Length: 269
Image 1 (cartoon, rainbow, N blue to C red):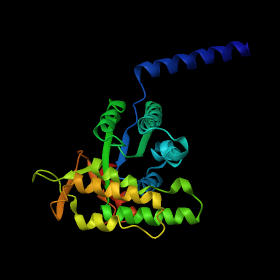
Image 2 (image 1 turned 90 degrees about the vertical axis):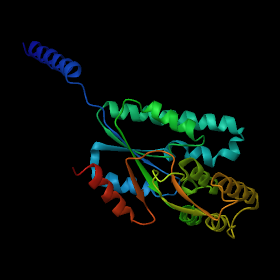
Image 3 (image 1 turned 180 degrees about the vertical axis):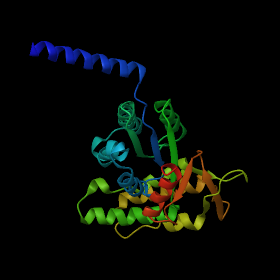
Image 4 (image 1 turned 180 degrees about the horizontal axis):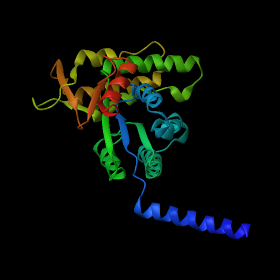
């Protein structure tokens, strides 16, 4: 008799679960995107936000999927096209994980660079992969001069602490070209000014730079000067290439202040 009651209870519970699944489906979680150039402060802000938002949010960071590939790039000895394909494969896995979490009603805090290595193409892929989800795009801005300063300090600290995964290449600042553009219209939001002097100072060789990296310094500097037309002009005003729901500036506000402002804007309504 006991077994019959247990079986009946099991059937009833199963029926209720099926009814709830079909008639009261789980509302997909939303995705809060913190986008910006490497070393702009996204990780620090997202970690601070996560402590405030609690267990209803899951943090997903692009670095957790691709950092080891960049560290092993020389050892892999892959042509650039094959290397980009490998990065894309890992990025796709990240978007699959986001889908998996949001489908369970979990919200996601995404620490990423939407424009990746291929600019507009990677942005289009991101929006395609996140299509149908509620997304909030937040730009984490930091001036180029401060980004390069942070990279140098971070690398020096990581080197002495033997934490190679936390090191960043100066080539990462090429993301600046994909995330920002020259302001041409008064309708566009002005983030600040980028000058030729800023770039010259940013790409002075530190004492510890390996000789093989000097070519990278020259290449990045040349690309940035060309991208922002600073061969002919002393300075330009810059604006984001994408539209964002909110912009925070980690050079003007502390990590705590940035996280507090995001919470006030989106979570304390």
